[in-house]
Amino acid sequence: MNCVEEDNFVEVKVLFFAKAREISGLSSTTFITEQHILVSKLLNQICQKFAIDCIRDSCVIAINECYCENLVNLHEGDEVAIIPTISGG
Image 1: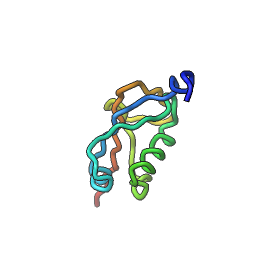
Image 2: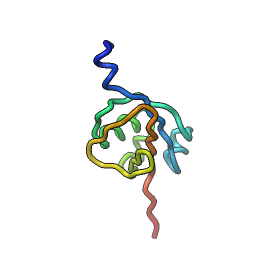
Image 3: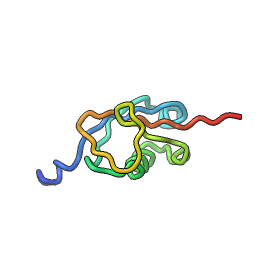
């Protein structure tokens, strides 16, 4: 990877909650991803990497404690939380 390409990637901290934590076996880890990325693509990448695909459709992402959708601009050290939605009846 050359210097120009490296500038397009950042290392973020991924936090796993509830079922995502249970399935992945992790409470947190680091992950390298594109700096400018669609939230859906980021969620897909994380779900595949950490084997939580089975709950992908019931998860939302929060970046630095703010729920996000669409395109995001990530920075080194940002926190990306994977939060399974909760339903009840």
